[in-house]
Image 1 (spheres, rainbow, N blue to C red):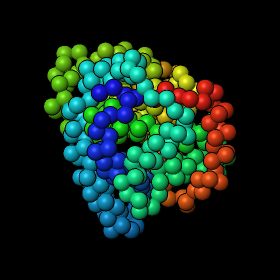
Image 2 (cartoon, rainbow, N blue to C red):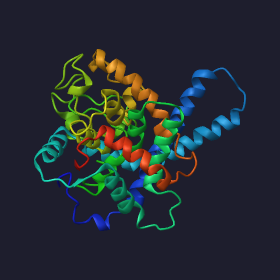
Image 3 (cartoon, one colour):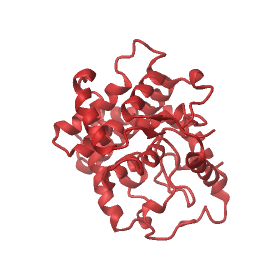
Image 4 (cartoon, one colour):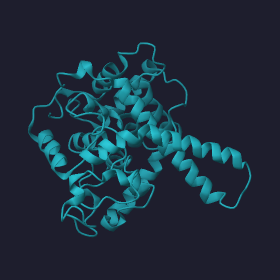
Length: 310
């Protein structure tokens, strides 16, 4: 299937199920981050040990909920698949709409099956943007917060399932690092037995720069490819979009051997953005109509073409 074309079975796809998987993935990353911070600061402390154990049990439970998802993702994300979808994106006909129309489309596709949902997709996007705005961050970063999850349209625009839309991302074309979540679940990925793709550097070279690395296909990589040539967003914004789910890199320190000097600066930007991705989902209920004029102006500032090819 080709990205950019609303697929025939879109009406049968469960957007809320996708969101549930995405939320469970976020929960794992939130709890993992909290446990990591705890171990760094309180490694010798016995204070509130029972609470620590309870939190770890929460983490294990959250991991169990995404285990089968990652098994499928880690089996199917191959070099061949990633080359195919990128080629499709370049050459296939794609739908055209503005950023705000894309937000409304995502809202409709995911939320229409549950009229009682407490928070719409647009409100989720506005939460991140408003948290960034409240902290006085640059206008381009506010816009990045607004659009960073818009790539989930991919679920309805040519994905093969949930596994090539959400989830932590990682490079393909080289050995799968042990710091990827569930590293053992790559056992059935054919690239793992490839004489080149299974080596440390694979098809890449040390210091080649992450711009030259092919990351596993999903909503981040999709949106990055959509906006990099159709916006005036700075490199830091593009890095936040492309790498915010690349947890093995920005949280665990994997794949540093491929970084160049530019990537060091981008790593700082991604780490600055990450809390707004994970922790802004409960920061009040945004008023869409009140905020819409401000964000429409912001969108026009960085998307001068207005109509975007998706």
